Image (cartoon, rainbow, N blue to C red; front, side, top):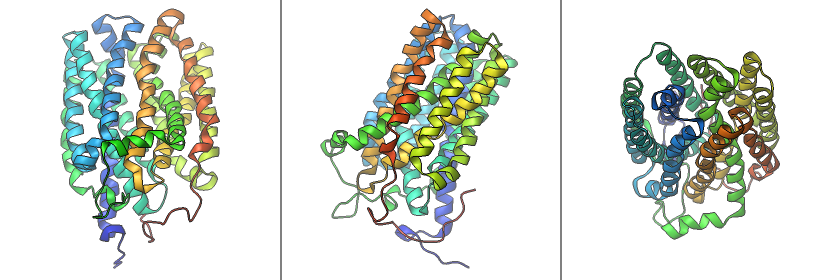
Length: 418
């Protein structure tokens, strides 16, 4: 029997259990988000609001996310990733359930308040789970972050499928999202004990060996040009991903004249393609590296968008959703890995890059909503093309560090991820 010991004295069993727990943790926010996104056309009908007002409603998620992300590195520094994930999942579930109640009553204000809580909790949870994943990735010694994000996509696939079924059989939104909220909390409680201290893999230098830093030192990371450029790449990727999550169902309903359940199914197609892209992306990254893969995927997303926007055929648009999903699959996880390249300040860099990326969720929903009300939702998606071009142009900023630039955490025979 192998007695291989990993960084921090962890056994192979502990490292694998940690990895599998991160898989589960990534899946739960995906399940929660797609459960809401898949019912968005139904919520729009129940609240009787215009397209631009849908944008303002979704703005609640974005506004909450920015607040959560700005606080996240400080909260993680105080509580640690594991405790932050626990309370983040609880608060995420509360916000999701409240949004479902607001959409069912119906009350725009209650739904908006629920989405603000949901967004803030999701932003904090996002940084904590990416930090735990980055720590595990460094202990494993190989690129596995896209697979973690693939499990987020697995969650969105499941959530979108259930949402499509719930919409088709007219399950009340409050009941549907309430059940999902309970599942998220219970599943999180099962996975959390298997997480390890993220600082095993991402040590932050301090004389006593514990994470260090003040508010001022963690905010100083925003002065780093390299961090900001990686953040802009993630901005383009997050906009490409988020625009589809928020708008593809409504774009299919309003722009290609399908019913609400079919719109939710096309969202599921997009999310399935994203999952496939993240799983296959690990092989592409190992062979070609980050920069060529980023440029190719941003180009693929652009082609998919063009098909959806300009070809008036629902089947072709669905093919476009596949290409868009494949193209949007790798930008965010590559950005998180690049942000964590320097283990000394990984938490602050991951938080900063995620915050810049989530700015796309802040400006995206209202911009696309307002434009959609004026020129139609399909043409409003042209905004996404601009940010895809930006991400492709700046892809070089995410290049892998040269070998020998930093000491490896450990060497070992790594367990295979799946």
